Amino acid sequence: MKCSKYKLKNDIEFLAYANDGEELSLSPFWEAELVEEDVDPGKKEYCNLQIIHAPESWDIKKQTRDKRLENEGILSYLDLANAFFLLRIKSLQKSKSIRDLVLEKYIEVVQFVNLENNENSGRNS
Image (spheres, rainbow, N blue to C red):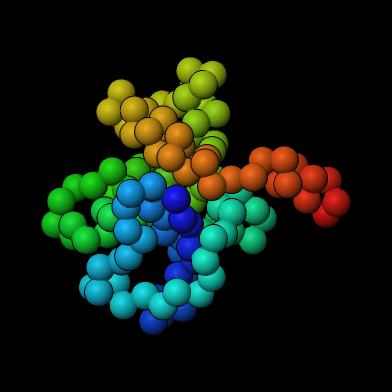
């Protein structure tokens, strides 16, 4: 599993990840440059960047999970974590299919987050 930071030609930065057994590569359509490898999406400097599942980037015509979540305003790790929290307390005002997508993606993405280090870094700020 890997999570890396990329940058588009228009200087927009984002995170892309791949699960075990998947290749972390983006469609050439993106014209993205690798900036940093093995990042923690929960860290302060990364948590507001959009995070995408790299294998989905190849399917530009299909309504992928990432595209559906983006349409609902769930783009970054912070958005995803907030949606997951609202889901857990049964306050997420989204359709069942979107709630299922939030849970599915959160389970994938949280594996890249070192919660212990992020908690400590938050206290030292």
